[in-house]
Length: 635
Image: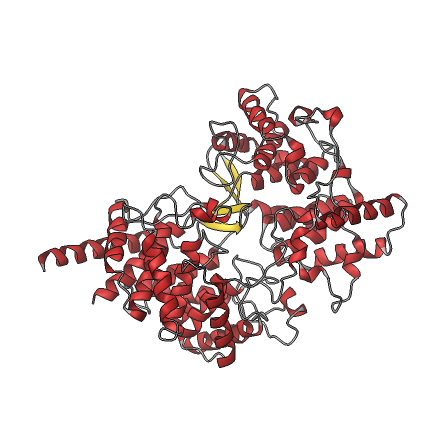
C-alpha cells in the first residue's frame, strides 16, 4: 500500500507540474498556441517569394541564413524529418534560398550541400514543385513542368471531374498555379543566380521532360504533351475565360486577414499568381497577403523561419480536454475563457464543402485563427468534446454550437462510411497518378483516424447521430483494421496514432460488439512497447510496414499508446496493466522540472512519405491527458 501511495503521489506531482506549465502559457485571449514545425522548404520558398515581389529588404531575411545553416546536417543535406538522413528536394530548395540570400557557391556549407545533392541525382531527380520554384527564376525550364489547363475552372459542378475533386489543400494551391503555369513567368531577382552546378548530368545535357513510369500511367505524360502543343499553337479552348475564373476564385477566397486556406502553399501560390497578373505590390490585396505570411513567421534574435500552418484551435481544444481530464474543475475561469474563445471561432459561413454537400448547414471549426472556407471534421469533433467537458457561462449557446457542429459533421460522411478531413467523397485516386501529383496528396479520402474521432465524439458526448450513420462508420473502421490489429494513422505518426484513436472510439461507441477488434488492437500496442517503457514510431513506417510501431520513445506517442490501452482496458478488461504501468513510469521519469516533456522527433503528418510536422504542444497536452485518465482509472 505504501508503494502504491508513493506511485500515486508521483503521478499527481507529474500532473500538477504539467498543468501548471499549460496554465502559464495560455494567451490572455484564452487560447493556447505553439509552433508548428516543418522542414526548411516553407522558409526557403518564402525567400523566393519576397525576392520575386521585391519585398526582401522589408523583412529580416538575413536571419534566414542563420536558420538554414543551423538546419543543415553533417551529411550536407537538409531533412524532411528529424534523423531521416537528408532529402534531395528539401536540400535543393535550401541551397537555392541560401544563394538568393547572397551565400556564394564556394561557401563550405554549399560545397558540402552540392556533394549531397549530386550524389542523389541532382535537380533533375527532384519533385515537381521544387522544379517549379526553380523555373520561376530561370534555374529550370518550364518544358519540364506539367501543364494545368485553365479551362478546368469552367467545368460544371456535375462534371465527372472539377477542381472540387482535388483535396482542399491541393485546390487552394492549384487554382493559383493554373495562372502561373499558363504564363510561365521568369522573374528577375537580385542577386541573379543559376544553379547549373546542381545538375549531375551537366547543364548542357538536361532533358526537361516529365518522368515516365513505363506503365499505363504514362498516358498522362502523353496527354501533357498534347496540352503543351495546344499552348504553343495558341489552341487552348476558353483560355482567357479560365484565367479570369481562376483570378476571381483566388480573390473570393482571401480572408479579411489576408490568408488563403490557412496554409502557406495556398498563400504563397496565390501571391505568385497575382504577381504573374502584374498586381502592384502596394495593392491592399497583396499587402494583406504578405502580412498574413508574416504572421506565420517566428523571429528570434538571430533567426527567422516560417511555419506551414498554425494550430490555435486544435491546441486549445486539446488543452481544455487534458486539463479537465487531469482534474481541473470544468468551470475553472481559465477553461471558461478558453471555451468561450472556441465558441467565437465556430464557422457559420459556407465554404467549398457546400459544392459536394449542397444540403448542409455550416457549423464546423478550422485549425487556424482564420479559415472560414475550410473547416475540418477532426478539429470540429475535438472542439465539441472539449466544449462538452467544460462548464461555460453561456451553456445555452454552447449546446446550440454543438448541435450545429453535429449536423454539419453528419452531412460530411463519405459513401464508404467514414469521414475525411475537409471534404466528402474526395476520393478519385487517379488524381494521385498525374505527373503534377508526385506528392501523392491530391485527394482527401475518408480515414480511420478522422472517422474514429467522430465516433469518439458521438459516444463521449452522447450525441444523437443517426443509427445508420454510426453503424456504417463502425463497419468502415473495422474493415480498416490491419491483420496485426493496428490501424493506419493518416494525420499522426502513424499506426500508434491510428490505433490509439480507434480504440478510444470503439471503447465508448461499441465496446461489446467490437471486443475482439479492441483486444487485438491493444495487443498490438503492447507488442511494440519499447524496453524503456515508452512507445515511438518513425516516419519511415509510411514507406516500410516492417517499421510499424518501431522508433525511439517519445512523450506524445507514449501518451497515444497509453490513451488507447486505457480505453481498451476500461471497455473490455484486456490485460494491459503491466504495459500501462511501464508507460506511466516512462512519462514520470522523462518529465523535466518545469513540467514539460521534450522530443526531437516529428510525430505529426502532413502528407505521408512527403511532409511531416512537429507540433510543439503534442509532447505537453497528450501526456497530461494520458496521466489524467490513468489517475482516474486508479480511483
